[in-house]
Image 1 (cartoon, helix red, strand yellow):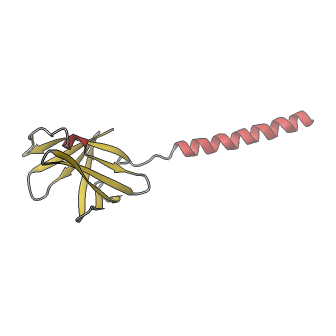
Image 2: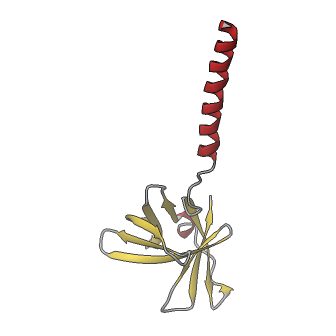
Image 3: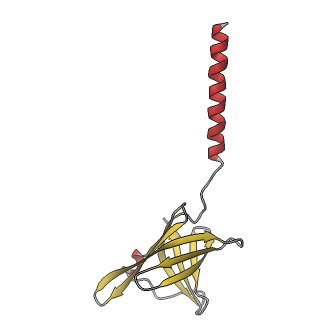
Length: 135
């Protein structure tokens, strides 16, 4: 009788712990979470001037807690300088994303779309699209 009771208890514990694992497997983070590397720029729908080695260092980092980094590199004279922005991101009801950042000089907002493995920033004032690829 003790063996049957022990077996029932062990099986019950295993059943409960396996259900918890199944529930945890159903959760997933937002597809924007991760590091996105600056890969190219489109002007009027066509690939623009290739990025410099300095510009290629640029990336966005989106974290699951809703914080984000904008690591923008720019050629200044002969140096490659980082202009880092930190802030937050949110997913909009239409499936797009908005990031609000602050760097050393400005507060700014970026609007993002995801298309497969590409993160796109569309400039509303000019026909320019910056494209980042998930790393």
